[in-house]
Length: 109
Image 1 (cartoon, rainbow, N blue to C red):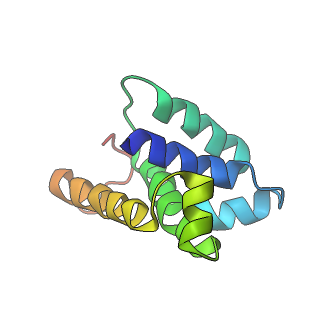
Image 2: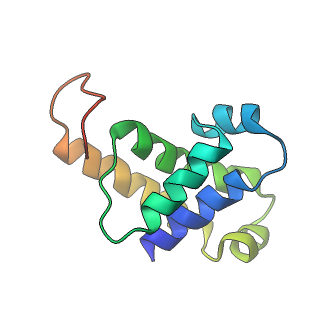
């Protein structure tokens, strides 16, 4: 369920017709890299760099903001907004619990 929610929010961003510049502002990566992360997230065993986890977090928190209603969000993503926000919070908690050191942004999480 969590992987699917992440993939759906990434797909929402990767499929947008507004180009790479808005994607870079929203997620920190262009649409091609968002699509690459969809494939990686869909895999059976995925390890992510912190920069990739940032993209996952950004997709989860920005998708609810971009859709005008809970109904639209649920129809497009297949989950509720609260689930996306809770999963984003869970990512933050997991990173906080496993952080190696201050300023270490290159590690695998």
